[in-house]
Image 1 (cartoon, rainbow, N blue to C red):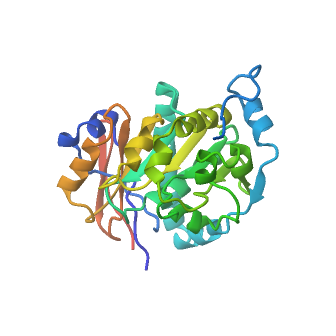
Image 2: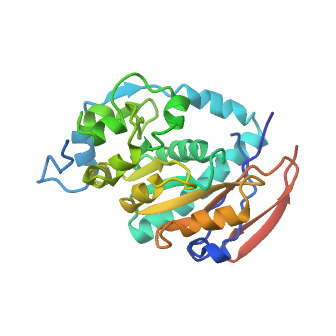
Length: 293
């Protein structure tokens, strides 16, 4: 059964004050021990540095792409879904240009709000730009939702990198989508918070920011976990995914209040029912449209 995701990037002012957080969206839909120091100090944070580091990455296909596109059907539904992510990509890249963002955490207040599919589809959309090398990281190492969705092959992942068992270049995978790289959650661990609290996480994000133009991190939900605070501390920005009629407003406000307001970029509003009147805001511009069923 098709479900619709209502997507938008809120303005920074609206998103950073949890007491004034507005839940307003765009009318689009889709279904739902190691050292990371620069090994080439003579090279700047450029594409050449990334290519030199990533040339020996293992390869993987993303079999989920066809499946995900199939969920949109065809015609207007698929076109609207694609346009939704282009709009989200545009707002993210504007923030990247204005604020120098490289690493962005995608989270939600509670489980089941669509953050993993949002992370995946946004990374696919961003990778379509020929000069934008993107890394997608499964940092929800408690559930490994992104890794299961993409079907990562056996091998090291984020846990192995942060615990010093392998170098990043030996864990990151080059996908069959040009410009898109991915890093799975890796080995099982019983201490995820401790891994993100270590200096290795910050060093790894710094390494990634030198090697990629954009790093998207699929993180755990905020509620009742310390992981997100630790993950976001090393990153440049945070996007919160909100599913319509899922989390209570007070829960959302509480979770938004746990995120550094300087890093909270905004909200992606999801799962508006088919046929609903959808309202959205781009700065001062507002409009409404009734989606066809």
